[in-house]
Length: 296
Ligand SMILES: [Zn+2]
Image 1 (cartoon, helix red, strand yellow):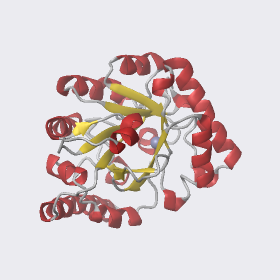
Image 2 (cartoon, helix red, strand yellow; image 1 turned 90 degrees about the vertical axis):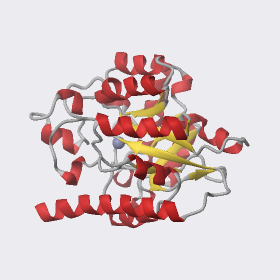
Image 3 (spheres, helix red, strand yellow; image 1 turned 60 degrees about the horizontal axis):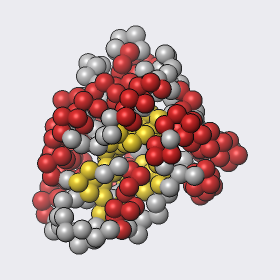
């Protein structure tokens, strides 16, 4: 078991190094592209189990990422991405989005203060059916396993007052991440349509339409049937204007705005790896993405 876990982390670390080397060897792209970085939990909880906690980025690591991005990239909200990609600009800075899935309390506690410090912006995708829940969200394998030995802020979801405070900061866009976080590969299309619509209803009611424009498919892997054409159509019909998968890639003006790819961030990523990811040196992650059985 331990060997497998160490191998998984080594693979991610090696993919990061390969990405940095690839980035150094690749000329800048002529086409306008954007990197949508995908984070989940931000926690310094000292529980190390690489099979399920490599998504847990520490606040210190995140600060180093945001410091680099604020100085070198143009950070935009997810909802603004298609319009930004379609607009010409003399800026040579790469375009990037910071996105955080699941709506953990640590977004409010750890991420928003960093956004203020660096005048950065981010999009958080909340699971409306679990906002304000005082137990780990049922899809959060890490939280379910470590709820007794990690601080509650590591696994608890934000409540609506906290989500509203994030939105009121002006530095945070809130978007939808479904109502129950079902895996679309195991859910009937009618239920998925309800997941997208109910989620948006809650967001509009609580926060207004500005925070009900973006959607992130739970799990979100197209190859695994987690962002199907039927689900995409349901998200569009519900009234969202942009949606994100977990497929690896950069977004361009030619991308379908309802299946925009993202790039996962791991706790082992240095700022140099973030720079390489934003620069599009993603070949190593296409390899590791194919190996992945399940994401979040
Ligand atoms: Zn999720």
